[in-house]
Image (cartoon, rainbow, N blue to C red):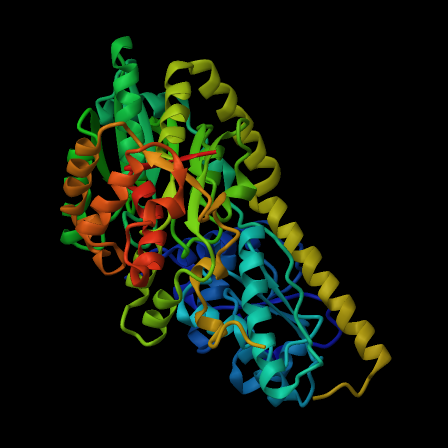
Length: 571
């Protein structure tokens, strides 16, 4: 590893990686999606980059040494250079810095302060979650930070690009209203998905046989896999999956088939672990549920190699892309996923598997959730949990998708093969790194053209706090449908007594009553269900006996009753 003082001039365009070991490893104390994505990216970058020299911007010299070790471990023999804040201006030599987050605004300030120019190099960031306070602040600050047209923030899905554009527009509207701002300079917002190492998910017949033996799954066992953090409030609420699997298990029971659900992940604490156990016992008693530790490589291999079908009914705004369906496709598994965020881009409905419709209330119905989050009444986890409690996944459609896959080995094989081919052609890091480098080259050309033209280039509001706007507006493109006053709803079954009994059972679950602050009272629930028992009718009609001051609150809660499988929507 070389210091910048040893760098010779004359290198062609390259790129520097902003490198902190914690951001590129899954072995740290707190494993999050961004860690897995960072570790996977770095491996892909070293394996497939066309660079003839590797650069890292680091906070400490030892981080540069760590970067060099990673490069060598992947077989790269090229020179590695590390730059710190002490010699930041040397970043002009590689010409671009890739930062593993959306907050390139502060780095634009660093660029201007260290060189007296906005054009010394380009910056490239990337979105992970965009619902946290830090991420929303970082994105909104792009409007006032000295970012340039040769900078970029990669959006990992079309849904998250819409979210980023909404956040930026809200910030612009506020500045126009307050300051009369008319000139805007924005970075590029290209859509490039995350990548995976598709070869990691190819398993031999022997591995598959061993995995199923470990699961005690015979030829009559249908194994459905969920992979990822087991968090009902900040990942994917499992109740829709449990209910759909229970219905499907009942329908295929006569064929002698047994349904097994493998949840391969980890619970943050014993409270959440117990919540999952209680919910699965009550909601899917005819499904055998097995939990494996997703932090262990051997357990992940057992899960991937032993599964027949993959499922992820994500309903959470913290998700932006969702890597596990791609991994499942690479493993040759048909997928059943929610029609939500990045899944809309990655999974082809009816080809690689099934995307299941989702419903969320219209914009304007969650300003109180935004306020609670902004005032820190709610933690970020509670903000995500309250929001997802009002997002529903179509349980009947999910059940039908499972039944179709359960009943047809040929369909499972066909969809699995289609998914694997798509993963290899579209999402392998070999393909994605090439897209990154094409973007970086484009940024370089735009910057050089600007320097040629200007060589001395230097240095009424709908959302009162754009970085804390109503999540149902900010994430309006995530669901399939928005709940409207005209949406036709009825009881999911014809028995009012059964519906009331079932909702009371669900309310006792830890994974449901944690969100009681955003849910209606028992009296309001009873009033709505009594009206719904009269048959399909517009959502507004279900509220005609609700006190006027409570109608908005109860209206959005109709999405919660859909989520619980108590109400159903008529298309």
